[in-house]
Image 1 (spheres, helix red, strand yellow):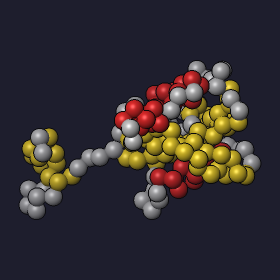
Image 2: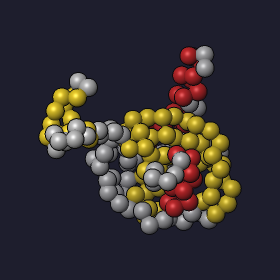
Image 3: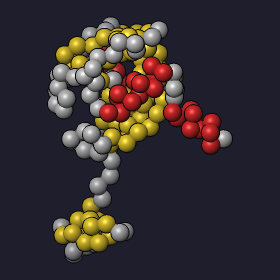
Image 4: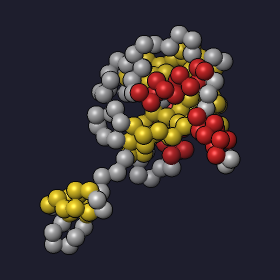
Length: 164
């Protein structure tokens, strides 16, 4: 593999067969589960941002839809079973040191399960939107929580403004 100019960028490519190695964002899903004015958060037990709080979230597996991944991540990280109820936002992830991602954020309703931390979490619980922890991992999680606290949904607002 050698670098070559391809579509206006330097990309690694095979000089023999011409195959180009494209580096694309990795899809991930996050979920907003609320109880009144409280939102479900997870204290991370893994890097990056170990011991910081975040939304239940994670990368898609190869055989999943983004919706399936969202429901799975909530169950694995918090023990709760949820039903997705809407789309909150779609954001580019630029502050994860592992890779650039594309984060699809859903809203969801609890339908069962018991609240308990999974293997990637030190603790899980509902936090008041008016008193969120200071140490929220990932800039997108902070932005989404701020939108939720203020009653905003950027996706719905942008779609309404575009007339979609």
